[in-house]
Amino acid sequence: MTRVLGIDPGLTRCGIGVVDVAADRTARLVHVDVVRSPVDASVGDRLAIIARGIRDVLDVHEPEVAAVERVFAQHNVASVMGTAQASGVALMLAAERGIPTATHTPSEVKAAITGYGSADKLQVQHMVARVLGLPSAPKPADAADALAIALCHAWRSGPASAAPGSDMSTPAQRAWAAAEKRSRVARTYVRTAR
Image (cartoon, one colour):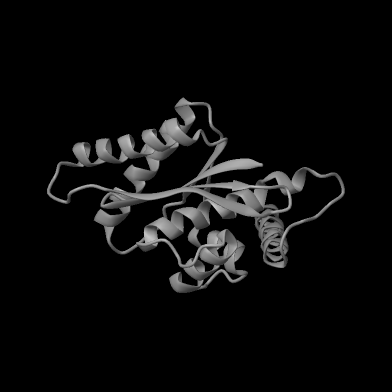
């Protein structure tokens, strides 16, 4: 059983989810919450609020690994900055405790959870609830997203891969890995052809 912390970073709402994932890929909800910071507070104060919320979860639940949604470019620069700052806080707090960290793109998370990298938020929320045996998806969406990030990380690199000779990855994960491999080969070919 591996305990995974998932963080959906944001300056206004930061989703935090903790799941226990077994070698057979079954998962159990440990904790889920959303840390909110007031929009009229200074950036430093808002990041301090988020840091306190993450520290509390680290203290109480002691995750073995942490995964954070990777920041991607958006048209709203202010939103990207806040997300990047919250992401940095989460990665730093985990690293301070010696917890291995990883980042995953929204498409990676969607592909791992639903089998489709362009799934909408409702599909992801539905699958999170189903996987964890919950009557409904945690609200707001940031909470379900944090759990999806934790599940994505556990399924892509977790205990299931430890059994020698066994491939317990889902078809979506195998397709994603194959696409990543093709992409690396293509980039290598382009560099050597120049």
